[in-house]
Length: 128
Ligand code: DCM
Image 1 (spheres, rainbow, N blue to C red):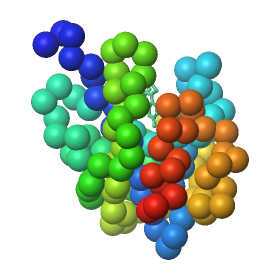
Image 2 (cartoon, protein in one colour):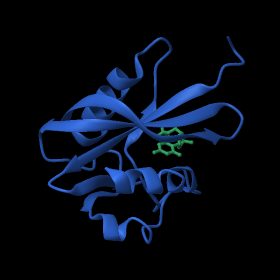
Image 3 (cartoon, rainbow, N blue to C red):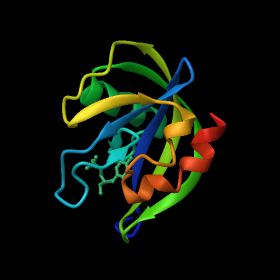
């Protein structure tokens, strides 16, 4: 049990052809870099429910979690990042815990200063 990696979920929200991204405020080594919004799933929490909860908490939007997107990305030894497509339902994203939020086109994916783990998701995100 204690040896299982903690799942970090991230939501890939696409609306009118644009992807929702958020700029981290912390920790210092990740501050200023962009990510797919998300966070740690609670023990026993269904990943898509975790996506829905995290985006509500961090961005004040309502989404419905959907299919896995892209590879699993190991974060250190204790966590694994998995992205899920998420359907936007309502609310305009507000940067509650982030520095800012943005909607980006596929042409901007490569040049965004991503959090290192999320960079592994770019190829799959372009498909969305
Ligand atoms: N994380 C990441 N990419 C994301 C979301 C989170 O690399 N899209 C990492 C940052 C932290 C850990 O997962 O090391 C937990 O995230 P948080 O601090 O947002 O709960």
